[in-house]
Structure formats: C-alpha cells, structure tokens
Length: 261
Image 1 (cartoon, one colour):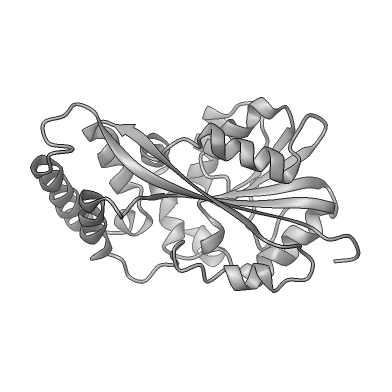
Image 2 (image 1 turned 120 degrees about the vertical axis):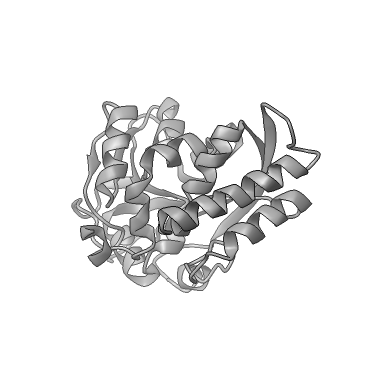
C-alpha cells in the first residue's frame, strides 16, 4: 500500500475501511464546534484546513460556520469517501509532514482523531508554514469513555490485538506542541457525550479501529464475535435495537505567534 511510505503502517489500514469508519465513528458535537470557532476565530472570510481529514466528519461539522474549507488526506479510500459525502470541498492528497499548500495560505488548521499519528516536530513545522500570522491550530479527539465498566471491557477486548500503535491518551505529542515557540499556550477543554448506536453501527465502529482493520479476516471475525458476546451480556446493551456509547472529547487549541517560520 503506497500510504505506508508516508504514514504509520497501521494508520494506512484506514484505507481498507473508509465506509465503516464514516458509519461507525461519532459526529462532532455542537459544543466541540463552538470551542473551535471561538478558539480559532473560524468565520466567513477565513480559510480553514482540515488536516488528515479522513471521510470529512470534522469538515462537515465546520461547514455551517461559513469559512472556506480545504482538506488534506493521505488515504485514497478516505479521499474517495470524503469526495462523495462532502461535495464542494477540495480534498488533496498529502500528509501532515508534507502539506500541499503554499506558505501563509490558511487562517486555521484543524486535526480530528489524527495528530497522534503524525511525526509531531515535522508536522508542526509544516503547520506553522501554512498558517498566516496569528493563525490557529485545533486538535480534537473523541474517545470511548473507559470510566464506564462495559466500555472498559470493550477496550480490553480490542486492545489485546494492539501491536503498539500511537495512542491519544499517551499524549506523547503534547510536549512537542508546548515546547514549540512558534505557538502560544495550549488550551484544553474536555467534554462528554453519548453516541446513539445500533449493533450494526457498533460493528462498524469496531472494524474501523486501525489495528482491527489490519487483522486477518479470521482473527478480525473472532474479535468482532467477542464484542458481540459482550454486548449480548451487558444490561446497558443486551437485546437493544439502539443503545448509548459514552464518549469523552478532548479539544485543544493554540495560536501561531507572528514572525518567520
């Protein structure tokens, strides 16, 4: 797969599951959009880059704010789904470490569910390059709320197949952002919400996990079967046509300092 020379080899597996990803992953809440709008100054007349845009979930959430939107995404499968579901927004082939835009061309960069996959120092240099003076950088992660016991059990089932991929919760990227003097202080807010899911959507959610997508069909089927057995045994999910999957959202934002890159 050609993406493997440009992105983490496990992240390249998203190319196999773009439709499951779009069906299974939650939407971005209005509270998340409001934080990005206020923190980054997103409004009509501004140009916003959605970096590693995936299938366009964050792009579509920001669309009502009236800014000009541009997307960059390395996965051909994700780009195809993006183009089908987000008509009118250009989606370019590129990575965080090699953004296919000119210098000082955007007012904000947003990254949903992806910054932990980047090589952070290289990505920040590229983000600083394409941002105009005082432009903003917003980072968002929706992650399953593992403080809920059945969700913690779900994660244990999935994590036994994890070969050691970069994790949001490790925040290995944070020191790089906070230590980069091209950017101001990193702000943070944490939100909670519930995703209403069906068993079918839950299956898509499981199969859209990068390292689950990378499994052989037989092992992937066993993992999905374990999840289905868990859902059949838990009071919050058993015999329900629809149930709530709890999430935590972490929203970070910072502003580019003026001056040369």
